[in-house]
Length: 436
Ligand SMILES: CC(=O)N[C@H]1[C@@H](OP(=O)(O)OP(=O)(O)OC[C@H]2O[C@@H](n3ccc(=O)[nH]c3=O)[C@H](O)[C@@H]2O)O[C@H](CO)[C@@H](O)[C@@H]1O
Ligand SMILES: C=C(OP(=O)(O)O)C(=O)O
Image 1 (cartoon, rainbow, N blue to C red):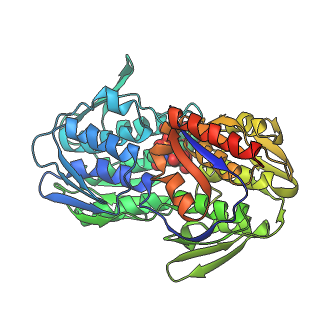
Image 2 (image 1 turned 135 degrees about the vertical axis):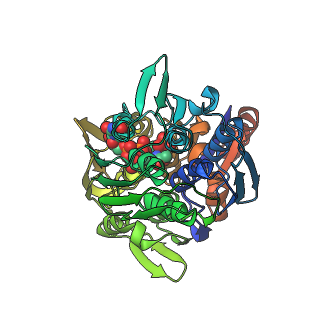
């Protein structure tokens, strides 16, 4: 079993660069199968487990996919299979995003119910409501979802009951190749949706309004491969910003875009962190004492749920009582129990967690309960007394490339090891303690 072992106490300094955004690249790769002519060339693609998974999903459907360094090329001009392979779809939430492109291009799509982080019930009703409004018939059963339409999808007016990122993306893709005009209301406004719309427009689509709550799409008859650079990952950037702040360090996070991170920057500043905009990113300087604050997760431009657990690690080190209210996912507090193993004092009340700081964090054996929880536990380990050992790294690998290595380059005392090596490490550590 692999572990990340971190010993607290080092201030982080230096420069780290954010990779391309996981939540932008996954819909973009899914969208690339809508092109019946030409190749797509995607740059700044992060080498994540989720990227390998979505590549396998579309490869099994007959698309030609190559990844070299940070560039992925997709040629989907051959006839594709319209069923996504279950073993890959189940690994990852975003694989449901092949439905929109398949249904628009072939009038049929079948996928298994997708996986992803277990952070709530994560229904797909808004995706399906959108497809139905465009004329598709949906059958859900035996762990799969199947959609069929006679001829082409028809443009429609669709109001989303909740501003869902995935539903907005799936329906934009379907509408791009539908007959006529589609108007989507109460859309999600995340930067990753804008990135997807920009890519689809390069492919020949007519989409306006992405990033606002109303998106208008004029369907076209055909879409073509295109070249696109993926936007930087605001959540990975935000995670490194917390790493700098929590250790009282000074780190330039290249690629961190202020306009994508306003709520995170504002809250960190309230906590006493200095954040300076530089030409190629944000410089983060941690204070000697952090102040308590409150956050409430909301759809963009509100505070991102994907930064909630990392902020919890920061708040554990702040002076006073902080409150986190999670409004996006109903079960995204599993890391609280793991933080408690590190001596954290926290109380869950409904959808809120009350955090009493500052905590005398102690190193412990903890599990990454989901992707961001894994990162947050490592952040706490950067300032805990002694060794923190984080397991279940499969979650972390879905969303972070070389997380431990990047922290090490910033000066952290951190290693990623397999269990056997970890035992050697522990013996050496206890030997060095006994000689003190
Ligand atoms: C691959 C990707 O981009 N994942 C992100 C995406 O997930 P994802 O697209 O799954 O998240 P959504 O925006 O769809 O979910 C937001 C809320 O809407 C609800 N909902 C969603 C769809 C639906 O049909 N019905 C419904 O009720 C969900 O249960 C949740 O409460 O946005 C989330 C919210 O910012 C992020 O945490 C994820 O990192
Ligand atoms: C919840 C997340 O991802 P996913 O939607 O892919 O499970 C995340 O990125 O924090």
